[in-house]
Each structure stands twice: as C-alpha cells, then as structure tokens.
Image (tube, rainbow, N blue to C red; front, side, top):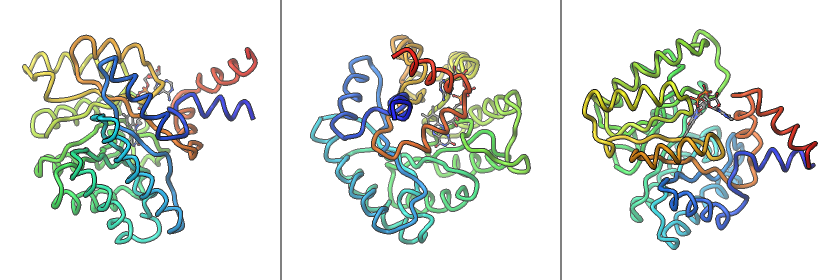
Length: 282
Ligand code: FDA
C-alpha cells in the first residue's frame, strides 16, 4: 500500500481540485504557468465519461474562482472517444465552450496510435468553432511531419513531445537519436510556420537546441513556451523561468493516476529504483 501511495505522489499534485490549485499557485510564485489535467483515460461507459466532463466543468470554476491563468489538458478517451465519436465530440465541446467563455485554453493530449486520427479529426472540428483549443503532436510518429504541416496551415497551437506510448516500428521511430532529430525538424517547422509552439520535453539537449534556435532566429520569448511534467527536473525549469523563458507545468491530479504514472515509470527505469529506495528509507 505504501509503495502505491509513494508511486501516486511522485508525479501527481494531489487528489482534489483544492490540492491541485494550491500546487498551481506555488508554481505561479516561481514564475511557472500551469496546465491542469484531471487524470483519467480509456473510459468505456457513459456514466464515467459524464463524471469526467463534470469534473472539468467544475475545475474551470475553480480556476476562475482562484483568479488563476491556468490552462487545462484533457484526453479524449476520458471523454468517451472509445464509446462513440459524436458523443465524445459533444462532451469536449461543452468543456471548450465553457473554457472559452471564461478565457481558458484547452489542450487535447495525444494518446496511442489507435486514437491518433480520430483525435486529430475531432480537433479540426473543434478548432473550426473555437480558438481556445490546441493539440499535441508526438515526434516519434512517422506521420507527424505531415500532420504538423497541415496543422500549421490552420494556425493550430501545437505542443510537441517525443511520445509516451509503446508503438510498433512501422508507425514510430524507436531510437532516441532519431526521435531527437525528428523533434528538431518538427520544432523548426513549428517555429517557421506554426503558431506559438509548446516545446514539451525534459531533454536538456533539446531544450538547449531550442534556446539556441530562438536566439539565432531572433524569436522573442513570448512567441513560444517550454512545458514539463509535474515532479520532473523541477529546479531546471525554475531556472529556465528565471532566465525569462515562458515555462508551463503539466499538473495532473485526481485518483485515476495508475496509467499516467506507469508511463512515467516506463520512460525512465531509474524511477522504479527511486520509488523502491524511498520506500525502504521510510
Ligand atoms: P527523455 O525521456 O529523453 O528524458 C530526458 C531526461 O528527463 C531523463 O534523462 C530524465 O532525467 C528526465 N525524465 C524524463 N522523463 C522522466 C520521468 N518519467 N521521470 C523522471 N525523469 C524523467 N506524450 C504523449 O504521448 N502525449 C501527450 O499528450 C504528452 N503530453 C506531454 C506534456 C508535457 C508537458 C510533457 C513534458 C510531456 C508530454 N508527453 C506526452 C510525454 C512525452 O511524450 C515523453 O514521453 C516524456 O516527456 C519523456 O520524454 P522527454 O522528451 O522528456 O525526454
């Protein structure tokens, strides 16, 4: 049980809106913006999907009441994508519509390849109606260059990350060196033709490359942002913010943290040892 609790709290800001908004306020004190995520995914029944919609609608009120400028991030499979696409569209539309009225930006996270095309299709539909919605592109997918090209054409706001799901080699690059090279290529395309790229990585090589790129192309700091995940390399991102870069933390919270945390563990085997070591030190 303690191992589970330890695991839960490694990467998650708490169980409740109150705990999460407190974490967001602390980050703000250090010059770091946030995007808040109510944990949940792979929902298979309408009752659970509707609870997720309600949780996001409530979160928007909490953000407003706190006077916070936090964004929100969500996953379509949490909003019913695996139940029915139109149902999911209507659920997410309700959230984005309310966010729009309150001046809040909504980022649609990207999940595994069985959902990539449907996520993009739904994003394009929503983007026709709303400006306050953005999408995520994963640098490891072979298809991403074309997707970024198409997204740039409509001025879509893209968060670029490496990709967190296990994918076959027909669909995704497997070697870190190649993924990094593609990340740079896609970031270059976003900087040249896109709208306000979000560079989402903890990789110092890519962060350094982005800083050099922005300096070499005279891109002002308010034309892009760095993003990182709550609990990872925190001090480095505080330093980036202190240097004058825009930095946003992805702040997940809630009780459905298992798949999210397992992805974090899979990204870095040292995490498993970290959890086990802390467990025995207590
Ligand atoms: P990389 O994995 O190379 O790590 C570089 C260094 O960062 C490591 O050596 C380590 O020190 C540290 N680090 C990285 N991951 C760590 C971890 N889990 N624990 C501890 N230290 C760690 N993916 C996706 O498929 N869809 C999405 O929508 C998103 N959204 C998203 C938002 C934001 C803000 C971020 C930062 C990332 C995502 N991701 C994502 C996850 C992303 O695809 C990727 O899996 C992770 O960011 C890890 O890759 P890095 O580029 O950070 O580097």
